[in-house]
Length: 122
Image (tube, rainbow, N blue to C red):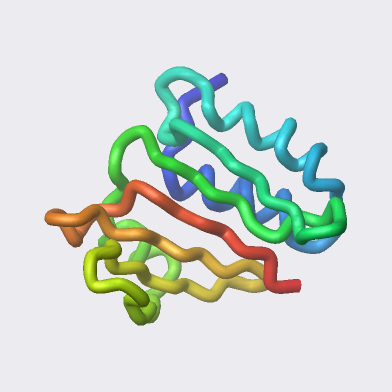
C-alpha cells in the first residue's frame, strides 16, 4: 500500500461512510488497509449503531500527529467542543457534507491532532 497522509485517510473514510449504507463489517475490512506500514494511520476502529450493522462512526489513531493548520486549511476553522471533564484533551468539530470530523488535540501540543473520529451525518 502506498503511504496515506491524514487528509487522504479522512477523505477515504468520508467516502466509505457517506451515501450508501454499507455494512459496518465491510467498511471495517476496507478501511483496515489504512493501517499499512508507513501510512499515517496506526489504528482504525469502525463502530456500528447499536442493534444494527449500520456505521455510526470511524475512529482513526494517527501514527504521527497531523497539524491543526492542515485540518483547518482543508475543512475551515472548526468549532471547539465543550470539555466534559477538566482533564480531557480539547476537541474541534468540522462539519463536512454528510460527515462530521472530530479532531482531538494532543495535550501539551495544541497545534497537533493524533485522534480523529468521523461520524456519519446522513
